[in-house]
Image (cartoon, rainbow, N blue to C red):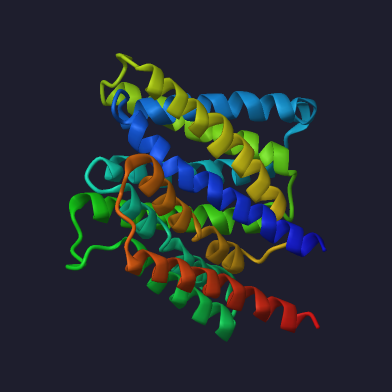
Length: 286
């Protein structure tokens, strides 16, 4: 039961993250990329610190190392994603981010020599095909924004991999605080270094960044970390690829992107991929 509750929790994360693509696009109208990240991760670090306050007086060196690695991967992923979003559409940004579904099992294979189950590999390929139908343009070309977003997928793949490994060994609340604190410090450094220190934020900008900091970051990463105790990192990556479905749907509803038959097909293939990947888990435990 815990396993299926964890899967449901990861699906909820994808719904919220789908809204995050739209929130980021709206925030970019009055904030620069590193300003958004600084405010976002400041909120998340403070909230995570309050949640894990009683545990912070005896953090181990191993937890600092683990949380630091997660934070570096998270910072790299989000910075590349939000800079890329300036030069591409939210739906295309969502697709290319979802490519981490293919990268995660190969990281696990290279680092841990972990075999890739056949049905999981099929599910991963189907998920990529689905998000391609959902989000890519007909010419399949990569702009600078697309390339940056593609690189961000590597960062997210490492974050998912690190989370899957470290959450089994260390305290989830402490890991999340250290992860967000690391991402915040790196965001401040890059914000100052790039001269993005003057804030002129609209009300919409503040609402968008509050959503990103409180809901899309704090709540979602607490939920993701807790759920990945019960879900394999490769299957978790496949489930999390569903954010491209919700990212496109929210882009259509809020930013008025046009919904096509191809988008419907992409959604169906992604949902089928998630089912196939998790059926392989059920069969393996029966």
